[in-house]
Length: 230
Image 1: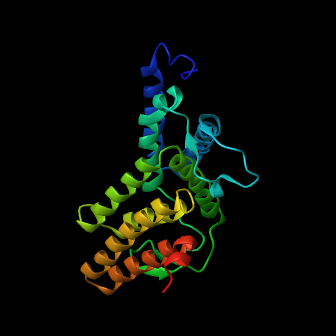
Image 2 (image 1 turned 30 degrees about the horizontal axis):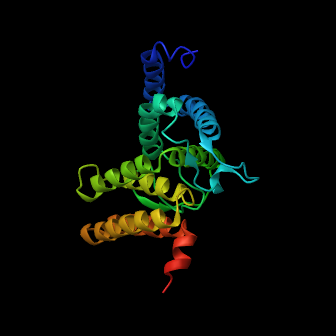
Image 3 (image 1 turned 135 degrees about the vertical axis):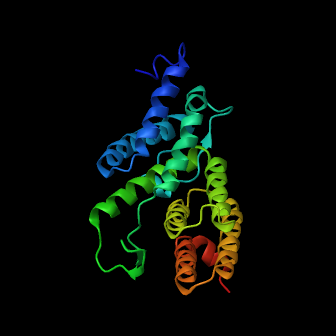
């Protein structure tokens, strides 16, 4: 309804979507799951209706980066401020991937994960797909958000195991959603900063968290590894 009235009253859509983003930040998993389902449907619809591409048989996770319509479509322009906030939300709240084995427990200790949380895996897959759609819709914005958050880890202003884990899981989730050249440039920056962070941090646990995240990120980009394996 808000989108249909957006031509005459765009502020209504912005307010409604902004409120939903704010609700999505609430620390309640059931509320977040409901919001995530909507965001996944919205980003999928925007991708498939606002981008020129030949629908492939595979899922969105392996789509070739699409070309936006010449001069970004009015609908995408309308949603752009909301999609920016949504990218920040997805990166900040990225669920734990199945591959991650080292986590922080309720006591703040680094432990090896022994059980697989099926709900978390399902949530990660939905969040990954949503962030992939968001990346296809505006790769530059996704990259800028991730690199800015990485700088906050490097300068210590937002340093925490929790924040670094979420960020690196998000970085790994968009593998394949960009051109090979963009992927190389992005990953070189990320890995360089993470290596510097590992060198900078003191304490065995801090170094272990950074090192495990480096290994995770690199492992998610086989195309990069094949091209630069020495």
